[in-house]
Length: 121
Image (tube, rainbow, N blue to C red; front, top):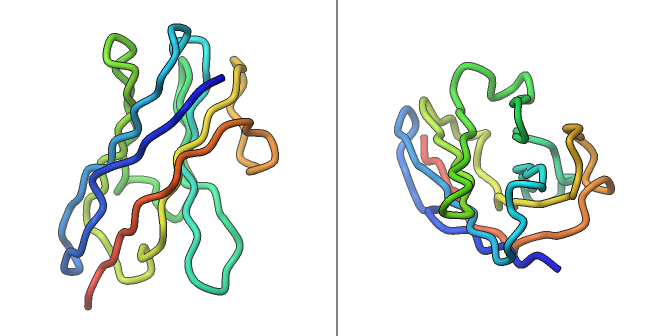
């Protein structure tokens, strides 16, 4: 069982930056792939980025967002730069015990409660 807690969301102007954190419980954090997803009102949950031994990004955030992990702290970070109003959403982190990076929400077994990111124009 893995419990995930996101933090770091907030309100920022377009062009600004935020860093989200996802902290996990459990002693085998390094065995889990971690994914970030986001969901805007009225839209489906969409993939943002994932990390295990490698990283993978959605095209919409490539070059602006950076995912990283600190296994000693059981934490994954999502550094978001050059934010746009269309990045506004609730951001969720998720985990699955896998070496392969996946982009579908159904591939992940554990989810956090989400953190709101709002980008004003």
